[in-house]
Amino acid sequence: MKPSPARLVSSLERSASLFTVVPVRTQAAELGPGDGVAALLWLPAIGAVLGAVAGLPATAVRQWSPHANGLGAVLAIVVLAIVTRCLHLDGLADTADGLGSRAPATRAREIMRKSDIGPFGVVTLVLVLLADVVAVSSVPGGRWTPAAALAIAAMTGRVAAVQAAMRGVRAARTSGFGALVADGVTPGAVAGWTFGALVAGAFIAAGAGLPIIWVVGSQCVAMGAGWALRVHAGRRLDGMTGDVFGALIETATAVALIGVALW
Image (cartoon, rainbow, N blue to C red):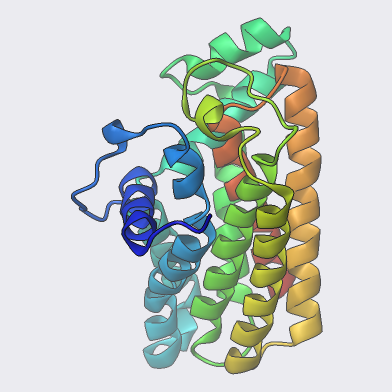
């Protein structure tokens, strides 16, 4: 049965509440059965919008002061971090600490739950953010290409999160975001978002003057990187956690940006 328009709007609001700084009336604390999955399914669309908005500083700098492209890229990545409340970056750092510890699954998950960031997390954050900044500053083309590249990359990264919640992928814990969404997305929804993101990427690339085949290929590689990380993390941690979803988003986003920049 198709969800009602009111339920679709509610899940969109809940997704914005969970994953962005946008103030909405539906709060994350109101999550009920199936609400986490419904919110997750809006994430790629929200990511495309956030990426495009975050790319505006880079677009403005490229238009008015092209010699300062690096500064524009830094501002774009800062905006993206702010509008997402650094949520996915935190997950990336925690996942790096857990996997880097080489500890058994239970101990690795305990390390990930700690509020501090260890050396693996710090190094991973620095490298990924540096790659993001350099990639955005290096994207070829006109003034709108940074915003287009960020929209495509942010959308692709969030598709990797949707793919990781597909039926058959279990949660590592009985509580937390991972438990809410893992094993909850149907294969049809995964296929729909995967295909939809590739089509949307092709349209955005065409509008920005980027090579369609190259961009779509970069998206596929990014999703493949997300799949590899998901499989590795699932084996090491005995399932998915909310932090791993954040790591998947940041990893696939960075790979997609790097791919576009290498054109």
